[in-house]
Amino acid sequence: MNDKNLHISDIEERDDSFFSKGTIHWEKSENEVWAELEKEISKKPAGKLIWLLHPIIQWSAAAVFILLLGGLGLVTSYTKTLECLPGEHILAELPDGSKVDLNAGSTLQYYPLKWRFERKLKFTGEAYFNVQKGTKFTVQSEWGSTQVLGTSFTIYSRDEQYRVTCITGKVQVNAPGNESVVLLPNVHVELEEGKLVLSKMFKTENALGWKNNQFFFANRPLKEVIDEIERQYAVTIRLQPELNNRNFGSNFSKKHNVEEVLDFVCKPMKLKFVKQAENVYLVTDES
Image 1 (cartoon, rainbow, N blue to C red):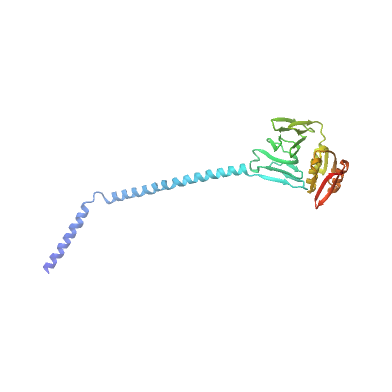
Image 2: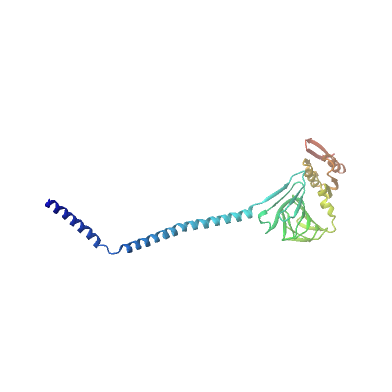
């Protein structure tokens, strides 16, 4: 019994000795250790947060830049095209309220998203423009350009022919080669052999007749007349090449059918027409 007690007491003494030695070697208090741990813990998330936000900011900035470029590209490249097919007349309204009456076989194209900053359009065919007042309004065609601030005018721009008639206000017409003229009401200009030729006191009803389905031709090449009949009636008319430059002067109304109109044109010029197929005609010399 005594031996056993001695053995247990020895173990207890050794245990006490071991744990007492463990506490002796603490150099800092428990509060100090926890304070340092909390300090280290509070540092780490801040460091990680900076490291994580850095690429996020970079990617966000890049995304914004790409969106801005995309938006700019959309504004500068998005176009709207209006096409008046053969046999049609249409009225188009532009973003600022300006109106364009398009004759058959005419096309205009503009940039809707930047219209408030730049009123500019591309045009081919024949049209009557009624422009709202505002910034400069420019109509670009292959053979010239027309600029106004607020007025009404007509443009004919087909093949190599370019004609402008001022109805109201003031119009500036620019031709290739930096030549330009200013038109007042009832003044007409036409591009002839690369030069702008003015006609004062012009009969504006001749330039506007097509709006009322009336067509006036004063000493015009026969091909131009035949081309107009094709557009108005949506037909095909084959003209012998040697007849292209024969001049024609007269007028007709669209209330007549195409064969009646061809008869009006052919008889005075001693020509004849033959129907070759549905909506297809051939015009030849009678001889």
